[in-house]
Image 1 (tube, rainbow, N blue to C red):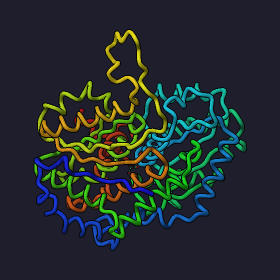
Image 2: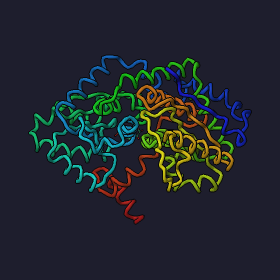
Image 3: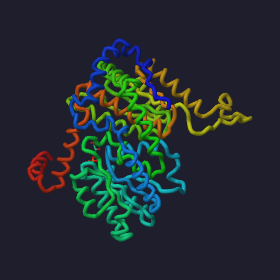
Image 4: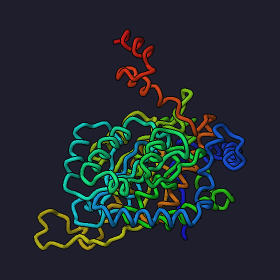
Length: 442
Ligand code: PA5
């Protein structure tokens, strides 16, 4: 299997090769910390060897559960937020037909619990009213408010539609082995469950049942996804592939040179949610202790018509990481037109993807010329295997980069602040002092 590659030629000029090479020793030490567990947050390194160590029996079991859900349900609602949502959403979107939602098809996967939108939930309820549906409820902590609200509402609806016994056959819970409200609920109700291991953080959990079950329900090959991830894990950890190391070193060299914002760029709309997944992975891992590259994302060429001006000529504190997809799944040529009223005959006969690739190349050159360094990631195609590689590449790059930055990449203390205020404002029992304090600020 071909490996994804990282090309750093486009950053030279903003930083030198010597600036990047100067980080080699820190980078290698950081990579070693991921395998020897000597770095901060070392109780969350379960993802490092996860692809190789996932038993085939677990994949079989997930596939069997997915087949059962597909048999029973027209729609499966995957409930979760953050790391319990974005990985599955990213992979499913990357592999799906762009119009799958509008086509009659086997079981559809939809998402809930990733927001507290009243209209969203009410509309989802309405959509599910006459449909056979099931639920995969995902929460590592088992206590997160957004998915808990969605689950309470949809569980009630499912039970009202089918009765409790039948409803319970269509609910799968993915959570901690012992702790949390979701674990107690699942035990009481007798749901089928999968465990998220303690040593795998939410944003590193896409290759566990958290991501794998919804992806399998959507009809994709999770074995191939894991094969791709395993190949990248083996190559990264043995030093045969230095893509993740190179990426981590390069982005830190750019950060030290004043480039504080990284924009992940795609030229394939199917990768939109991959950008969302990546933003959580890098944002939550690195943004702490007053440090961290701000992760942003754009979908080109769409966003060239909205953000292109800023990127070309705005403040020069940004760099781009462009995911270049080698080949498309389909082939479509631009037709010739005798009248040529639109003036497009100069590209008649060309593939749409060729035009897209010229737009990509033209943009990269323009941005580099305009002072926006470009890292390029060459991804051969959007397949399960290559997406598996890409996931592991970004996870490893994130761990290495976080250690180079000298933060603990595996905690997220900052996400508690809003929760505490929200609980205080909602007068949750146990938050009386916080309620008083926050009222004084209003
Ligand atoms: O990366 C993380 O740990 C978080 O973003 C979580 O994924 C997110 O908060 C959801 O948490 P949980 O799965 O416990 O409901």
